[in-house]
Length: 319
Image 1 (tube, rainbow, N blue to C red):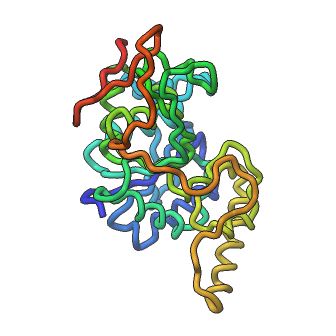
Image 2 (image 1 turned 90 degrees about the vertical axis):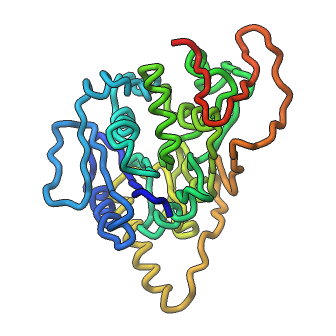
Image 3 (image 1 turned 120 degrees about the vertical axis):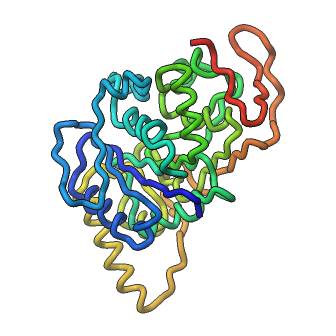
């Protein structure tokens, strides 16, 4: 495992009781005691946190984040300068830059079915020897800087092509990636939109991006049921906004496992046959992936792909 500790952090405006309860379970698990710190980042600075909790609650003044360059990470959608994402990146990229070798960032409407489901993903993909630097749902490519679809029109001036994106409702970040993000913020004094920022910085810094099947159930919209979760007990899911539904499903799964453990051996994930936008094994994108495309013409505002020397930050466009 990693030489330093890891962390997992929920991001929320204010945490509901189910999030706090599950975070406590994670923090109390023997596998976490000396290896993993459990956090909840609370955007609302007026929220009163629980005393004597194993959870580490974080609340940061908006102006502190903004003055350090950590702002605008989701301004394109939220129309706010500073939200929980800006604060959590400020905290783990700058404030705690020497404390953690790997950090999981999980939005509060993402659902981790059990403590075992967390450790299943963590143990597979956070290892500094054979894990990844960014663990996320997908790694869509925009090789030539096409701004006609999705939200790519927001990218010019922030990154040169090629660009990459993923949903980031639940992601894992290595210290290398967090340091690369900190380097970008130091140069540019702001955070680009997170859904292309994580992937593009990872790829342009020659880091390893992994899209595990356990995150294939992180999608924009889906009516997940207990049966979906039962069929893929090690997957993480999005969206699960209702805390009562999350609590009920978690209880059903726990009871089912207690019953089935007397009869059958658990066999891991079974493929969910219903519709989701992203299913099955996702490809991996290590930095040494050979190109499968021809270089675009050097014309107009589209720049050719840049070749970055090892261990050097990419030449971001002028601020």
